[in-house]
Amino acid sequence: MNLIEWAQDAPVLWQYTVLFLLAAAPWMDVSIVVPLGIVWGLPPFSVGLTAFLGNCILILLLGLFFKQFSAWRAKRRMKKGINSPTKKETRSRQIWEKYGIPGLALLAPILVGTDIAAVLALTFGSSRRHVIGWMTVSLAVWTILFAVGSIYGFSFLNLI
Image (cartoon, rainbow, N blue to C red; front, side, top):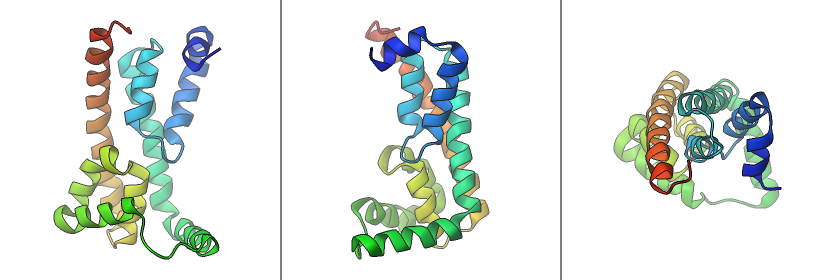
C-alpha cells in the first residue's frame, strides 16, 4: 500500500496530523506538503493552513532556540569534519548579502528551504524578530502559491 492509498483510506484527522508533522519536520517545506495533501484529496484551504502552521512552528522553534541549535550544529559539524560551508550555505549567504533577510526569506522555499534559510539568516547576524517575521510572510505567500499551483496543475493532469 503506497502513501496515497493509505491517505485515501485513513481517517481525516490522521491525514491532517501526518501533513502537520511533515510540515514541522526539518527539510520538509510547504512545496512538498501542500501538493501532497491536495493530491490526497483534502480541501486546499485546510491543507495550506495545516502546512503553514506546521512549518511556522518549526521556524518559531528555530528562532527561539537558535543558540542551543547552533551549539549542537557546530559540535556535529566538528565531529563530521565539516569545515567549509555547504553549497546551500554559500548560496544563502550570497542572497542574504545582495537582498537582505526579505530576499532570503522570499527565495528560501524554492532555493534552500525555509528552516535552513532561517538558521543561516540568524547565523549571518539577522535579528530573531526579523527572521521570524519575514519567514512567516514568505511561508504565507508560498503556501498560497503552492496551493493554487497544485489545484490547477493536478486538475490539468486529471489527478484530482
